[in-house]
Amino acid sequence: MKLTIQRFCKHRKPLKSIKADYEVPENSKTLLEALTYIKTKIDGSLTFNSGCRSGVCGSCAVRVNGKEQLCCSYTPKEDDIIEPLSKTGTIKDLVVDNNILQNTLKRVKSWLDKPSPITKMSIEDEKRIEKQTDCILCASCYSVCPVLEIDSEFLGPFALSRAYRYINDIRCEEKKSKIDALQIKGIWDCTLCGECTLVCPQGIDPKNDIMLLQSKSVQLGYDNPNLSNTDNLFGGFNPDF
Image 1 (cartoon, rainbow, N blue to C red):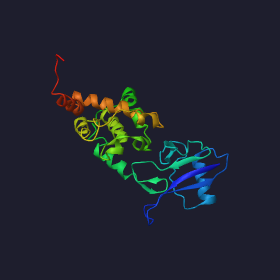
Image 2: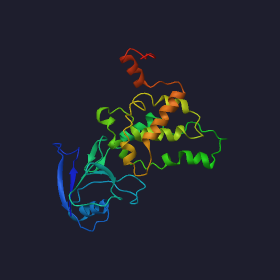
Image 3: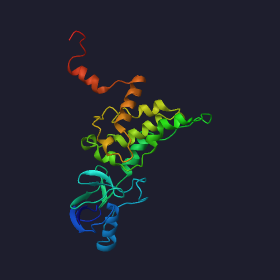
C-alpha cells in the first residue's frame, strides 16, 4: 500500500517542501502503525508526534487527503496523502508548532481566576462543562478554520470553546473579564460555518459554544459589531422599511 507524506524541515536550507512515497504493509491497522513502520524500517528521518496511541492525547493529529484525523484512530488506504495540520507552522514533516495554540489560550484567560473556596460543584454543574473538558487539544478545529486563512490573529474555535468551558464553570468569579477578552478577533469574527464541529474527534461543538458566548456577551451589554456595521451601511434601521 502506497502512502504519500508531505515532508518539510524549517531548519534545512534551502527551505523545500517535498512529497515522498512509501510502501507500507497492507494490513496496517492505523496510520500511526504505518508511520512507525516507515520510521523503523524505511526512513528513520521521518518525524511525527504520538503519545497515548488510543485517541485521548491529541498529539498525533494530521491531515489525510485534506481532512484532519488522528493517526492512532485512522485506518490508512491506498494512495492516502498525509500532511501536517495547517495554520500553526510546520517544524519538521508532520510536527507542527503548538506555541501559537498555547498563546491563544493565554489570550482568552483559559483558567480559573481565584476560584471560590466555598463553592461546591454538583453533578449538574460538572455535566455543564463536561463536554468541553473532554477536549484533547489536538488542534484539528484550529487547522480546519477558514477564518484563520485570512486572519491569523483570530482566536479560533480551539481557544473560544475552552474559554466557554471556564466561563460556564460555577467556580469562576471572573466571568466578565473572560468575556471581555473574546470581543476582539474572537466570537464576532467567527462565520459559524461549523467546520470545527464536524472535525472534532471528541464530538465537541465549538460552533454552538461560540454562539452561546455571543449570547452571554449580549446579556452583558455587548453589541454584535457585524450588525452595527450593517446598520451603518444602510443608513441605520428603518422600522417602516
